[in-house]
Length: 419
Image 1: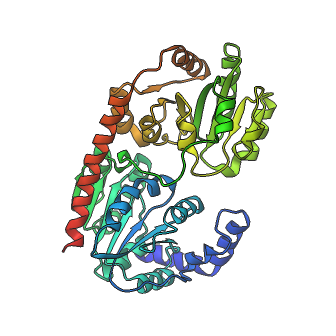
Image 2: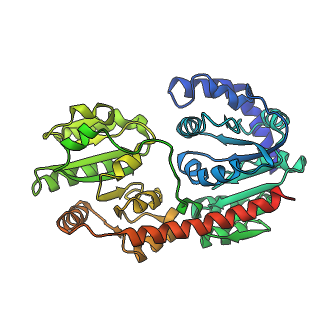
Image 3: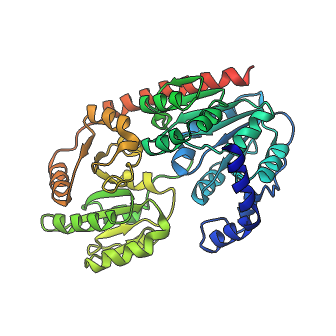
């Protein structure tokens, strides 16, 4: 099976420049740094111990920030390499560590042997750590050929991906068996990893519970805050196609009761912002983009967020958050960040990707399921009419839980650093 996988990646090799160039034209790749995916590397490796973290996108990147902050302080570690795939994650990490010479960000090369070999030859990591569900067979095989310790942390295997790997059971055991340690993010993923052939599997909990400190200003403009101080505000975050219209119609229902209702929509993929604006405008809603907050007035219905890294600012002014990816068959989105920022969370019926997290938050009374526009409308009305409760104890429980997970993961990783 691995032979055929390598064969098809070699077939893709000649057309890979065209593929990435077309993605660049669609602004899905960095205008110049997309070449890093061919292992055209301009950064210098330097000497000393290098620890390498690989994540796919924004959520996984944010989840490892507390780990990075901890390992920056480790004297043995000379350099921390972070690789990602998506443009958005690259922008956030580059901005985050722009002043820290110990941390360098690169885009992961395509999983083609010639690129993989060049990448590993240049960086020669002392320890490699994959995060979440990042499984690249050629890269994993080459890492083990070079006897580099390989860890999977916050490992997440969905039911869908498990079924695919189980279909090629012998091959899955070969690939997953190459990991020296797998730290699962849930009991379900722990069981899946064991079945798929991972040998050293542990479960300390989901790393996304860790509290990420930000070095950016999370406060919105004071003039804007003054404008909206008397508005009833709710937020719909990480929304997917059809969910924005759902939220727009919910806004119309709420507007019958509250003339001062303000809805904030943060789509999962901001490149859809113009399409979403047209959909909402057809509902006769007045939309303002977050880069034009000076245009917000009493007639504004929706603030549409079309830039990354803004969610916490808007969670801070929202009492309630609807989390998308849950009305469609996507499996939901991570509810931890809004729960930590004192928001009541609502979600649709499809949350299979985060079942255990939602179960924990429901036990704390901060998450509820809705099935349709009427249920979401009624739930928001109830929240708007209720008194603001002090949720500091709930937030402390979440933060303490996350700290325990973080310390356990750090302890596991340090075993390999000190070996």
